[in-house]
Length: 449
Image 1 (cartoon, one colour):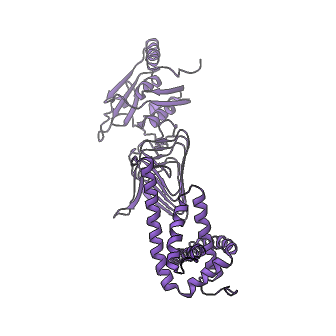
Image 2 (tube, one colour; image 1 turned 90 degrees about the vertical axis):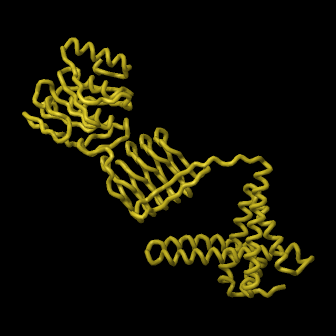
Image 3 (cartoon, one colour; image 1 turned 120 degrees about the vertical axis):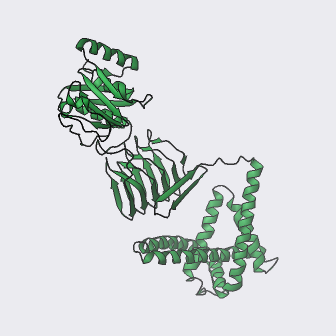
């Protein structure tokens, strides 16, 4: 068997280390404080002993110091470790020689026993005598076991990094790179390294790749958030008005709130300009069937009352413009429906073109507000026309026509599937009357009968 250690249990690892140590008369002396209960690591490497030590340090989250006597060691090590304690793996790597392993916090120094390097104190500030210690500053490669990315052996794991903001552009956080808060507005970001703060996407997309880490929250509002296999988010994940793509094997340690879940996702900016996000997965209140039906009926009647009040104002102040839209809706409803579809597409394209420039954004916002008000006014005209078709023989009062049509409009809207189609048709017919009459400014070419 070519592998020294392959998928063996902790007892098997200890036994193998003991047998080799007995035959070679070698041992590993550990100095300093070695905490128990460290997170197990998984390593697969076939390289020199220094490279195996680097892989172990990367997986365990250590900072590693290798003197020249160890750094230049050319002995080959073949490791295939799965879910073993880091200190036990260290002993297995160093079992074929006499070594001293010193630890101070997360700083681990490996030296050969009996050399001046081994007598060096691991405490910061005391300089060793004899041969100088050469610190290996090559980037540690991510093994994919812990998901932690470390730029160099001397970089502190909790390094904060700089904030990054993207507006309509692309950002790439490279492997081994650490940034703090990342905010994306209408752009995209690919994370291969570490985000020590929060990742927030608004109207854009973010992809957290395999081995990347987000230590805060990952939030998407009206955007796309993708977590690949092996990606890790230590905080909460929240998506509102967008969609979450989470591969099997993606790690999320906090709560997950997407469009189908009950909860809140809040995004804010503090006084220092740092982006903050808060995800709360509130448990929905349990209600019976009749309680849910009552809630829906109450909501429908409330919306009908609000639309009726708005419609009263429109009928009172609209004058001839509203009358023109009513005539057009009664004369050619199918034509108005087709023009409504064209009008929606044209409005969307116009808004997108305006948002390309900074000057066009406020123009698009004002246009959207005017369009919403005009759309509701056109719906009032269509509903009044529909109400008159059924109640004209009883009363000529347009306000009664509007009130009855508003109630029917929202009650039919409660019917699954059919209600959504009905509301969409009425809305598109209303928009079509706006287009055909140029916002109600021109009367129908055909006289009323």
